[in-house]
Length: 317
Image (cartoon, rainbow, N blue to C red):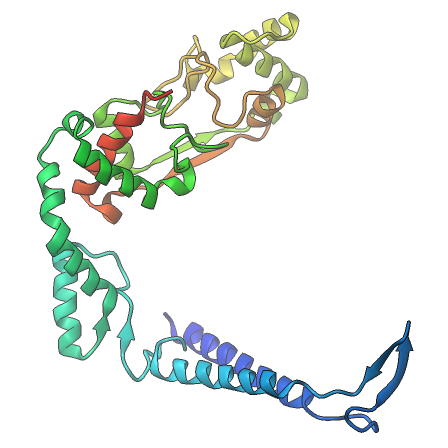
């Protein structure tokens, strides 16, 4: 962090604490001519406002919280580049491999620092590393049929993937259902592994300027008709003539292209909704989707187990 931003955080943080202390002290004073406990002269519906001070227990607790916050910032990092008197840090500033993490712990100990997170990583690697390595040598198809591996894969999924795809892996609007066997980037073990390792980035351009509002309605009707939906035939025929702008990615037959992540428009599986309005919005404004890369976060062995789990649930629907 640059010196400017470090001092910015220090001034802002300490200024806030000082401001709160001044505000609290100011509110503890009696700025009226009314004795404490006496009426302020305001009455409404039988309720009389009294000049009562702040509760003593509340003000004492507030002062203690301020003191605790100040002591925390003295001993632990929280003020810009100041690392605190204890030199404690939760982790390194960049993602480390297991070997780098172990070396970081050694370096930290020699420097008198406490790197708790990296220490926990090293402990976990010593206990669970051999288990993950056992499955790293297996084929993904074999992992998908191994009950023990699938239990591990399910836990990895719940910890890292369920936030977007749901605990049941059935997804939601904008996040694919992983149980229907439909994968825009390919559903083979190799495709799934690559998706998890490297991530994916898809982009559906907006076509409002190119097609106009009427053209959007017509193309949306044709797209819906590709999956057997009942639509206005005249609109669909007009949309078919304009589908050329979509065919470059989705193919002339609308069956998509896994190399580009372009969805198959004929299978009645819709990522952003299957209504006429939802399809029109996709055409009008475009869509952007990002699948994060898990290779550097989880490592190849965990990604392989996770790939086997995703493969195992891919045909549940």
